[in-house]
Image (tube, rainbow, N blue to C red; front, side, top):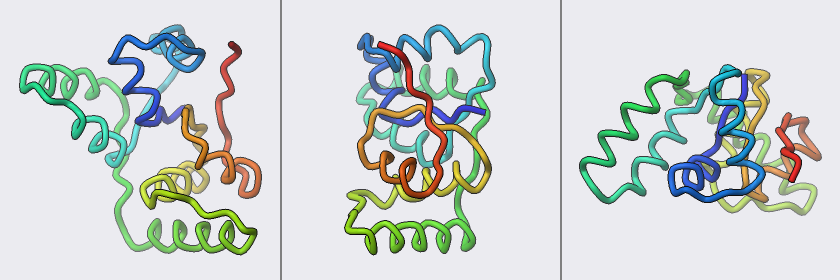
Length: 133
């Protein structure tokens, strides 16, 4: 399954055209796509209007939404953060560590537009969609 990160959803719902949103637009009806509860939270936090909030919340229900809380993921995420920090790489956002660690642990591929995930791909085996563009 491909997990779609907040960075891509924001562009997609904002009407931004780039290789990532084009890939999502082309694959949305053909592939199993999902997101995490953390991605859903980030996406919905950025919505100002009540009507749009409700509309996007309903649209997101058609995708698999994974719960990512819990001690196991917290420990995996902290461990991955420490491994990368030991290699001189500091990840800017804890939520990115949690999302990347979830994808690695569960074997999901990530579609994103956030450089923090690059280190997880390069050093920890995160699988990533690289749209052509």
